[in-house]
Image 1 (tube, rainbow, N blue to C red):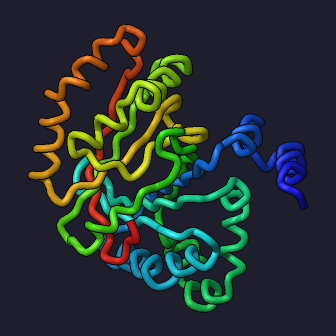
Image 2: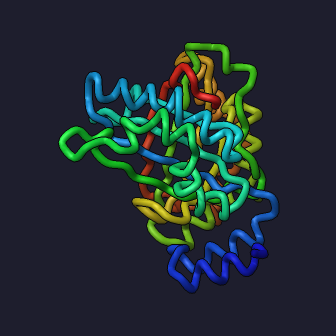
Length: 262
């Protein structure tokens, strides 16, 4: 089936939740789709079993199915309940739409992951799961794996979600990062991005979400201090066209699992 035919058929069948997704996929200019999965976990041994499943079964399966780099993170600050975040970059919307079925059909998953995927009702593998679907920004089309830091066990990630009070304001804030040059200011001041994504489907919309990586908390504090006093940022934030574009900010500090590929 040709790509355009797939999107037409899927939209008609109700497979795609938003009609605009097909158009976005056709015109994404090489950008990736990011699935960010938030898993509310059990505590104790149940949480350990889920982490073992991702290490031994899920991450290798995702790699076989075309997801080149999988991020798995635990929460250090920002959530009050046990939570895992899983980051899945997709090269196409077709990959995302078909992933669950392909994953469950994988022979290794079926043989080695049965305790999780077929968990009984009275002992579920997790409490609940939420997903957000994002399209990467034009000025940062791909998830950037921090290769130089992957061997650093002290590295940490900052996940920030910017909510806007209207779709127009959300679009303007994305423009501030792209055309306004905020992404470059991040890089110039030591704020190393992993991704920037416009949320297409998920909670608390409209919003954008991005992730930064640091080699530790001291590096994080120093980089943000440089950013706040950077002349280019001070000039950009005073531009009236970008005023009142963010109504709420969520800030979460994450630690990568030992086997995380991001």
